[in-house]
Amino acid sequence: MSLFGLGSRNQKTFRPKKSAPSGSKGAQLQKHIDATLGSGNLREAVRLPPGEDINEWLAVNAVDFFNQVNILYGTLTEFCTPSNCPKMTAGQKYEYLWADGVTVKKPIEVSAPKYVEYLMDWIEVQLDDESIFPQRLGAPFPPNFPDVVKTIFKRLFRVYAHIYHSHFQKIVSLKEEAHLNTCFKHFVLFTWEFRLIDKGELAPLYELVESILQL
Image (tube, rainbow, N blue to C red; front, top):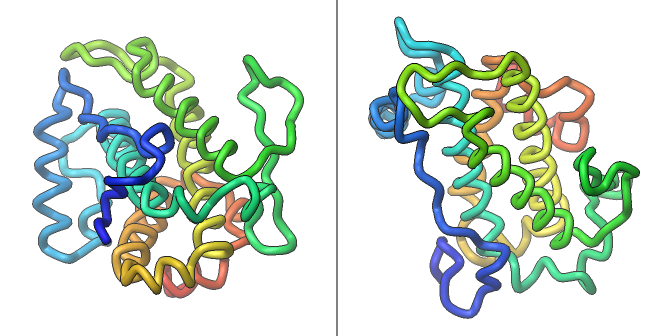
């Protein structure tokens, strides 16, 4: 079965791959990511390249991790359904309610697939907003850019938490656990390097996070 969730899968949930910011140094930094990931050293791959702007690095990686989660979840859309996953949970102790602060100000309970749909829609709006993720060379990042990035990564973590708690056996049966684990390790190392997710948010997968970080 294809890793990329093509064929009969729900195309609305699985989105086309987004490109790195085209202006600035987006393409150049994306090549750096691809080259360092190819070396197999994930700890080295997440570090800010010497002389590069941290916001540029966060922006390119936000797009990259959005694409990774998109692909991973795209393999599960026929299994992660409103009937199978009526709530967005990460095990029995954690449930995530949806709110975006704009159209949905009071957190609401939704099914896991609806939550992921809302989440991916919200992230795409942020990534496509040039006042937040500038496309032009030299255009400034907004003062609240680090906060936006932190919210993106915090919410992407919730998709990983749901996949591991609710769909890991399906991932194993699809023979994609190695890919999932590598993607999550890369995600954890990056978010830890730049302190993008509060420790409390990591609780649903904290043992796995600890094993990755070797704390």
